Image (cartoon, rainbow, N blue to C red; front, side, top):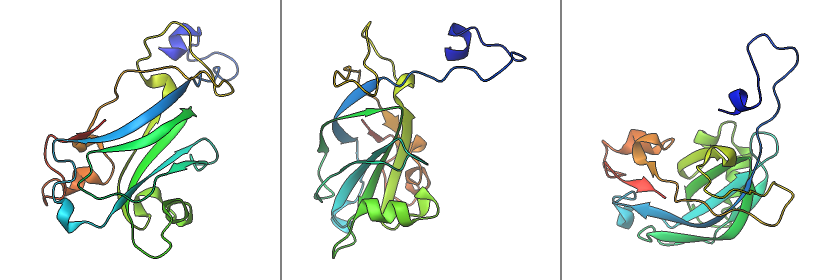
Length: 172
C-alpha cells in the first residue's frame, strides 16, 4: 500500500520514499488464554522494549521482574515509533539484565533467558485516527489492540507441542 500510495513502480529511478513512522503509546502487554502454560515451572519474567538503532537495538524500557502467572504487565505508556521489538525473558537471577542479554547475543532468538519475542512497525498497525504523530512528536496516536497468536511468536511457536505455551493463546 505504501509503494502504491507514493507512486512507486518497479523500474523507477532511485529508492522509494521511506515509510512513515507514526509514534504510538504502549500501555500493557497482556498474556491471553494460557500463553504461559505452566507459570509455576518458570522463573519470574521481564519485558524488554527496543526501537530504532542498528538491528532495533535502542533501549526503550525494561520492566521489573514479575511472577510468570501475571496476565498483564504495564508498559508505562511509553512512546515508540518505526521498528519495535518486544521480548519476554525469564529473569536468570543475580543482576540479570534483559537488555544486556539481548545486546550481547549474536542473534536475538539466542539471547540468554528469552521466552519469546515479536517485531512490528508502527506504520503497519491499523491506526484509526486521521492525524498521526511522527517519531519527533510527543503526541503519540492511540491504536486498536494488536493481537499476535502464539503460532506467530518467535521461539514460542516451537514450544506449543511441548506444553510451555497453550495452543490458541496470544499476546495483546
